[in-house]
Length: 370
Image 1: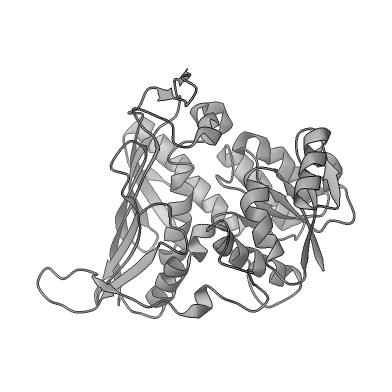
Image 2: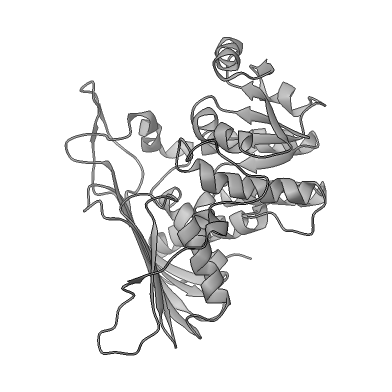
């Protein structure tokens, strides 16, 4: 039995906790928040055995094997480092680091301690995306030639903030931006399909200069809400990633890859969750051919031994999270399987983000750090 402690009574309790509880051989035993009284309240509300008002105490608890760190990026670094120093395996949120150097330090310590580190880039376990990755590996596309990704959400619009719990995104010191948040999900899905990136040229912009909250308060954000990247991968495949979280058309998520034999495309009307995301493909060679044929996704991408929900996941994200958590636990228990998305992949995505930010300043192609 692997025992899990969760830092965060918000998204951690709402989405991560159902995923952990869906796994056989895992018990979520503890919750940690910034104050003991809120931790005690969360313990009572969610049925935990222990509550902590200090993450350092959780990191040294011998009865905990895995710590799930789900706080804001600028707070997460020390929490992850303390958990690793305490010998705990770590499931960490994304964006992985508030800086590239912090991402490197977390990865180095995780590897040196020989612990399992996984990040919450759960989109790559969304069934349609996971099946697309398998089809590419099996040669459905032939030789991959190019890709495009479009991720447009209306989190913030001219008239209102649609996610009032995430207004902290506006403060650049917290480590968020459209590139760091939406980009982390898109880039993790992309590199797991097509391999690592070699260089990037990017344009980042802030189009919406104020956010109106439901109570009438107006915030002036300090972070980019539009990002366009041209990526050259290590295998020389080149493509574009377009990210928007303010206004725009709110068209959702699309990731398309084309090659010598065909085309595959995943589409979601919003975030790529397991129930709304569809996969389309085509291997014909007709004029103006598009990936227009819906592909049936095998049930193994939404069901697995040792993973069960009493009903469809109460929060859609919990299902792909549970797949990532299942792989993590299997590796911890000695199975011949590699946890994913691991810290090494997260570090590479952080390096792409860092290179994109430097490219935006310099206006040139920028190499992605190893």
